[in-house]
Length: 291
Ligand code: UTP
Image (tube, rainbow, N blue to C red):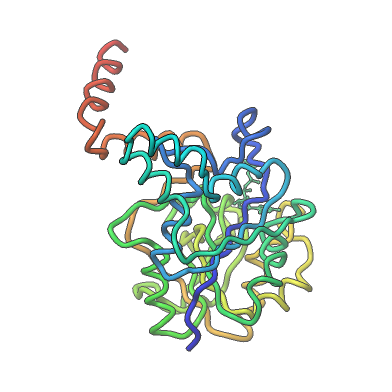
């Protein structure tokens, strides 16, 4: 079985739900307290064994490239000022032994199209896909949990979780061959079904391990839900060729592509920080008392 060393981060979407901040700032650079979403994402992939990080970018995304580059001037300044803690934080943004590759998606034609844009870098290997705005917090990084499933099954693996039936229209939804089992084989997958048509309430979230067979299928995938080339539609075709597993991960997911999910993640992570957690709780209490 081939080891997974490449992680693809499709970040070419415009993040319109966060306008105006996303006019010039990538959604993925929004911080959860003090660390941008995209850094949490890269740390998760590296913890799972990725050594090649591929960003599929678009307009107004250059800040991501700068974030994962060395900043020697700032390093020297911090060194001269003896600010060793900050220097360590700064250096940790560029993990050693990891290479970064940037591929441009010429137009935002959909997640499936963005993944296809990475084919020239991924090649004939299984790979991770990580959507940084799906922020998952837990003891074991989600991609690492999924890699273990990949290593025991040798198959593609998709992270899923239960959602309320009225939310199926926001997600890809899977049907499983054995509902009580985790991981379980996917028998059917459909993008953004109406609640009354959804085959289940088990929703796809932004973590995938896919075999390279997906690329040939993506090449012939037409426009689907929302007029976009959907990764879900290509995975549906993949089911006819290979087993694909759904994995219900351990951890809490925050949908940081919408404002409430982002604020919830910010509040919960801030409360858990040793440095500010206790003061932050007191502050929240004061604010709520005034209401
Ligand atoms: P979303 O639809 O959640 O992100 O796409 P968006 O389009 O940036 O956000 P809104 O709806 O306008 O607020 C899910 C993921 O797929 C990527 C996005 O960057 C995000 O990580 N994506 C989507 C692409 O890379 N290319 C696309 O053409 C579409």
